[in-house]
Image (tube, rainbow, N blue to C red; front, side, top):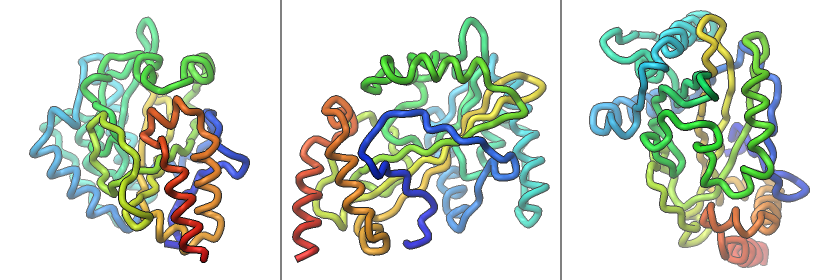
Length: 273
């Protein structure tokens, strides 16, 4: 667990920010030891719950075709050892998503930027179908403080994004299940004790495609046992506690974190005795 890819906790406490970093296109997508398991989960979900994990409008078709070409090109160059059997009998956003661990979303500019195609097999407690055709503000409307803190910079960023400059960011949450596929909107705080809690991180990238002008949003999920992270990273427990303590009450309610900090504090104190 010492090699867990990302721990994006703020050392000075919780804050809401875009947190964008320049993305080297050579590191656009990531393949790790869970690749085979993740792709098998995707296959099962696409077979059993296609309408839950896929949503498309015709407006997203052009960008999806270009996305599929970019994904196959990336894998050919950076992961020549990986077999890339492209399925030509299905929507290109789905064909692309079958090749990578990332969930894939295609946003297209009409009156404003709207989500027009996506294959999201591993949502973190949100429903894809309700987001199709939605604007950036509509997609994020349930998130507390977003309209005040992030709506304007997010929309401005999408307007300025160019094909030659891409970005990535990290997002995290603290939940009670290691499952990657969590489409329900129900949010409850972690139950049980530290051994039953999980730290979930999303590595997100934003890239504008050259020909179609569509923006591709990718999400790669990483999940680890909170107990194992506490054991392998000396400051993890204390920093997580600080972030939970300092998150606004509205955000704690939205995330299902009410009372979680007190329970985590008690657990950490008990394990340190």
